[in-house]
Length: 245
Length: 197
Image (tube, rainbow over all chains, first blue to last red; front, side, top):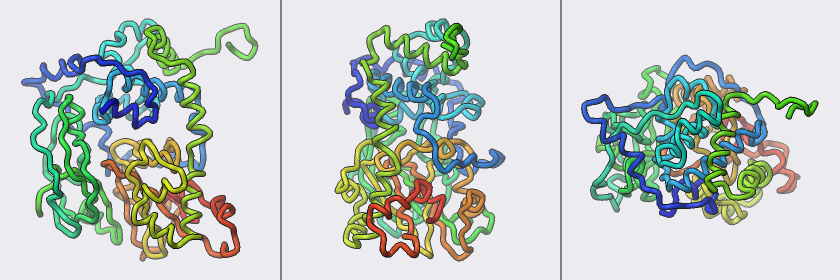
């Protein structure tokens, strides 16, 4: 993969270098004996008390110019450091929870771009704060250990449409795309999609593992135990997140 | 500079941080000439919900296209020239009088860029992401989309690689309209599933 995120962001022209990933994962080596970062603040499904949706039917792509710049800078940094989609997302998820909840999307991207730039040695934190003339909060370190051996992939789907499955009741350290609100819950496979790189692996090293993904239907009343009727929530999940129910 | 041209306009802390990162990356030769302007231009003028509206209108007037669209969204959308990042694995879900689909990304902000453009701020902010999977009927009503109790709701959490596009119901009384006129009726919110037409 030349540069997962740069391509995702639609900027294949972004400069690409061969900087090592090692700097980003040095922090992971220090994680032994410490509480690993799990269940980040970004995992918001079902959280209560966050208030009303500030809905507007239409808005400009970039209400303020700095937002467009922040977006472009993330594309540049992701291209230079060759960040996978998982590493990119995890760089946002590692933000301080208070900062995450009180800042908007493009401030998340700015913080993540700056964090990746520092972790990969493009700039230093003190340079950033010197130029900004004040604090420049960055995301916290990667606390999960690096993935060295991705293990065998899964070529053929283990489940088919109509199969009952249960999401593993686990709290993996580091990045995952298994939302907390479905862990331990049973659902039914409603669609089998293609085989894709497992985010939990690609976020934490150069290793890759590929598995099928499934769309799994959960009855909302079963998720929330609130008796609501006629509502299902369909969540797309990698093979290794699931077990037979 | 401020409008009077004498003093620098006050920059907010986040603007100062963006400027700092931009300056440092530029000094290291990592910001290609015109790159930021090109990104801005593309998302302001080329990519947006007007693309998804063309897909929906085509599906309303051409039953065979609709069949292809629901069977293989990525390929059918590509027939109209739309595709690319965050649109490589498209699934189109149809709203009917009995079933209402709505899309969300609880973990971040996944959204079908080629057909809908960049996601609106409220789609990316915590309240929508937290509440749509927990109390969709109440939240939809709060957002002005009141569904009868017997309408089934299917919330689609875009947690893996698939990106969803909702095909809204064609409004009554539009039988005589052209495809172009129909596309003008299709709103972004109806393709997210937080509105009906």
